[in-house]
Image 1 (cartoon, each protein chain N blue to C red):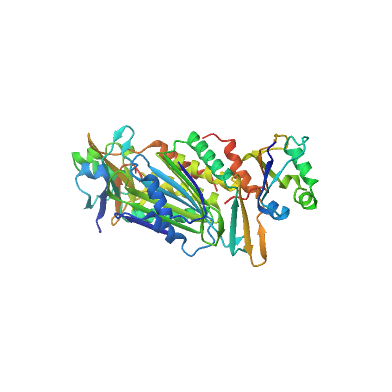
Image 2 (image 1 turned 30 degrees about the vertical axis):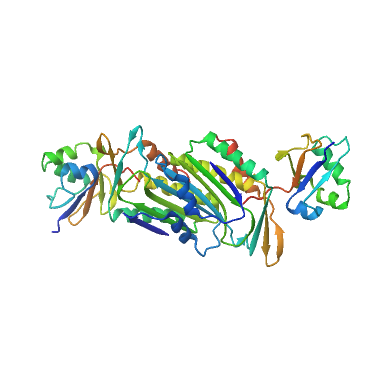
Length: 86
Length: 86
Length: 153
Length: 153
């Protein structure tokens, strides 16, 4: 089963401490909400960075995604704060 | 008494045949309306060029003017079609 | 705050750079470049001559620029309008407005362009394969300018 | 119809000239140039770093440009957005829209700029005398972009 690629931007990257990583979440991770819940359990840096749900935006395969949108092995999932434009 | 300077632009200039001229209208010419009436009597080219009131715009001393606005000796009075911009 | 009415061409890039040179309080620069089209409706146009009323044009352009400055927070502005005979593709007019606020820059620039196209004392003569003619005023343009009268920024 | 996301600076005059080179059906070219301000609110800003999401940015910019093309009669358009560390006065973004109709060019340009400022995946880090910080999203910007959703051209 292919891994899931996670990307972090802006202060989410600084707080988590890496720009990207590959993970293999358990089968109960099926959508954005369950992915975020699982990630919060990965350690205090993740729990702190992902604590405020409104401050965390998600894109799945380079498309903005909401809590109920599906994620699957092989996906590119990006986490970032609200965009602040050019 | 100083003369009045008349300027013509665009097709009004072509129809009247000169770009500018100095005139000394009679004392009853006191506003734009009486000036235009007097000018129509100056010859067939003037009568034809000034026949359609809506097609003739007037500026007195470089300010747009209406029928009732005053004109006086020494004024610069310009006659032109509606502007067609840049 | 500059107004120029001239027969000569202008260099848009150089004008834009000069407008904001050394200014760091400008977040957005909105500009409009008008050029000569080779079609008027369905008619091919081979050249165009812009006549204007020297003296009155500059005076009115300076006044409308002052009105824009009073209505919007503008850091810098520029109006260059050419006159004389122009060919398709030639530059006609450049209007540029710099502001700390992009919405203000867009609105002020469009206000100036709508005004220029409808109120400035310019008359357009087109050369076509069928002959030359003076262009008639367009009602749609008057409406574009008039909407600003009712709409405070 | 061009989208570029790059660290390098661009030459506005050259880009504008290239956009309309050889086109004679374009009556108006509206452009927006965004530059780095030296103030954010009352705070002096000494530099700014723009981070973006490579791949997603280009994809989203191409999509919004296609949406503008579908909504307005556009003859040519260009979006250039820089990323990386920029100093006050530096160019950030250039959006240009050419159309036979000036109203369409103004609206489409403002639509693209509003969208870029609120939806494109860019994040801004400011350097100030008091330290560095990531810029917070602004509600006013979201409103500017959202009004397009309710307003067909």
